[in-house]
Length: 386
Image 1 (spheres, rainbow, N blue to C red):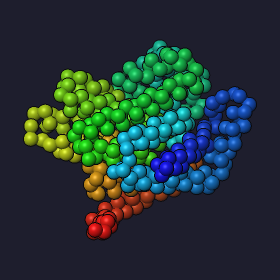
Image 2: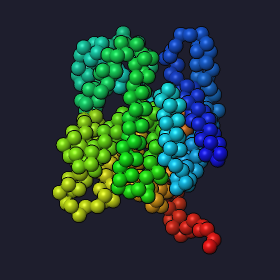
Image 3: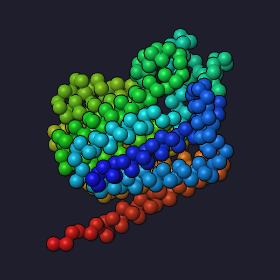
Image 4: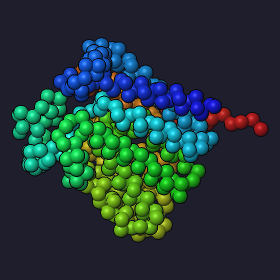
């Protein structure tokens, strides 16, 4: 009964996020011409664009709710059954995969990059969105001045979706979202299988640490960043490696790096585990976290820190889910990373003072992480009385 109540309220919180996402529908984008939908869309857009303090407050309340439930499910992980865990994960995927990409315009760029091939029959490495001045998607895209920035395997996955969508925006939009949803579920499944074999005591808690993390849900299912597809292939590669299917494992890792290059760093722990027989799985995962952190630092120096950079690190934290020096930072840093969107929602752009507020938030988050982690060791959880 307790689980049914918790899951019901949790799904309502996710539905809250789903509805809120439509407050951020671009003012130049019409998702449907149905009159009833127009009323719905304009009502939600009015909140997102013309009642910004209210919109920001709603977003913050969503974050608080999701992280409360995240903490509860982590706390209850030792009592949750595997079936109950999967109910929560599937429920989250079904609700959020149909949301609007509220906090990022990258999904539109993915769609258009593929469209350059399927509709304009040209090379996206050589052509950019601005080369097509009559294109209707220019009205609601961002970063229209850049050419295709990713590795070629992403096109292998997305060009077929563009063909299937037949140049209709909404079907293509949801095909891309379904790809992200399937990748989220696939990543979770293979992570669970890996933990089940390598660290059974972390099987449920480690899976929850990743799959129900609000940052993973928002960046993978709502904003729909391609990083979740990259991580699906990386985790599939690791699963195949654990099963000693080394050839297919290598192909999967190459495919993962063929999306965005970052997971190419993982070849180091794979080589260590393959050639240095004394390398433990804990060492493998620790090196993976470190290398994904390095990739995030490089990307941050090149541009700026983005919350979805953490998507590549959190899966490898799962094997250490019961370690406070991992659990506490993952929880707090994920929260403060998502807090980065609040100033943008309030001011409506990324101009000053937004960058300064974001920097202060990051610094505060790191400070609280260090303090909270230290306190968690100084004052351990109360034990049951004998």
